[in-house]
Image 1: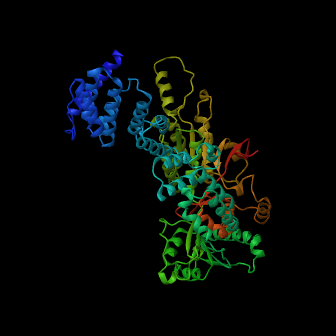
Image 2: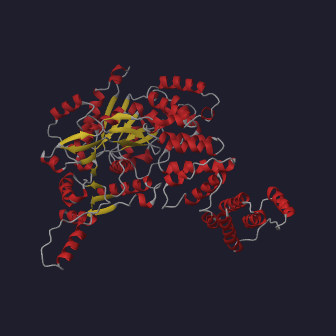
Image 3: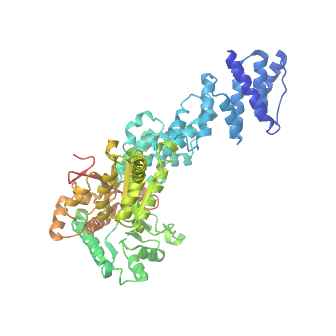
Length: 640
């Protein structure tokens, strides 16, 4: 008790000095040590808002008058709260620091921890997990409890724990349309694996149920409408139904997709003729395999236009008469065509512009007879974007618990773009972690094979280890038998290089890893680093390489009959063209699904080029399966 009382006195004394440097209190009473004055002081505290300085003085005088530690601690916590809320965190932090060794009652401990969490919320040395551990206490004050849940929502979102973030958000504030919209957005960020433990998150459970309903029925409009009507009856009066997501209203209003006349813009001559013709063959393969088209009243008509001999103005005129447009393929053609398009044109571009254009609005007269959402034009951008693969690779490396990757990239502009996309995504993923829990990626850029070897050895500290061996050797006469050692903190190597460079790179990495570490460092790559038409010896050199690639070229190909047919027709087709063929197949097959996919981000289409979704920028984003080279064979991760 004496130690506790002394601590409170020291706290009060320290803070009185601190408060003397602050502003003059706006409301202040001057209590004495007599009992009557104590009663007046308590009444004044309850009736008037006291400044933090006055509260600190009260804490000291309360203890001096009767040694009441609980009241003194209450006043100190109140002072810290006021300083925190008024934008003076340094003074609040001084109070908290002074109280760090003092045992606090349960109710004050929860308030103390909330203040600590607010102090550390944006500290890069403190992880979101550490902040969240401070937010587990029970708070009786409704305002403080909402602050607690608001901070939880922020920290869960930083960690990418979207369901927990949404659940906390609903507890942190009054329910408004904006809150429901934010909750719905976060719930849709969550993966199916995240939804397994949803039962304990009662606030967000209806949102997850709705998401699952949409995901299961989204491509069957009549079934979706029926299920949504039933959902609204079951959850009648729930805020989610009261502030119903606009996207669900839009998608239920969609008219059947009309595609009687589909125009395809591709380079069918010139230097990119092989590229354009391969995509055309993929589109035709999907067209002739389209069962829904065969049963339709009118078989869709395909018209192929060579962009190499057609002006953007001519393409815009042709597009205005089509039900759907596929293409163009080249970015410059997409950029040139977009400003010329009628607002009613529906286009699946096979590339992305530098900036996504804002949706064009119809005039009042044009909208008069165009009430269906499907009647309006829309441009969607579907590209085999290497940056998407780099971002997915960052997610994969992070989710597998790696914290200190080395990035190896050639000076080629493509590989540098992929490296930048990886770094950007890595920064987002590690935003909720303390600085000691991860490292900024170590970068290795090279121009030739010699530079590649030297760069890797330098990044792994192998070169420095060799120099230390030589230095020691110079001090002794006998020969030293030693092996250079690499950095032990490195736990992943990510490669952005051509297939030929990757084939050379993997053995260099293996040779640079010290056998004393006891563990191999996994090497990750994208599909751009793998070519299936090279010699079988390459798989020996790529042992243990983890890479992403399309389902179409992996052993688990979902269309084996079509794959066998294409091999018979084009036995010498390079891997790059095989991927473009699958690109054409998916471009045609997703046309009737695009309306639902635009309005419902929950929907995924399992294509030959990957799992396809459409993001808020109207871009088709692919998620690719992971494979690994093992004993000169390719094994898809997660399959037997």
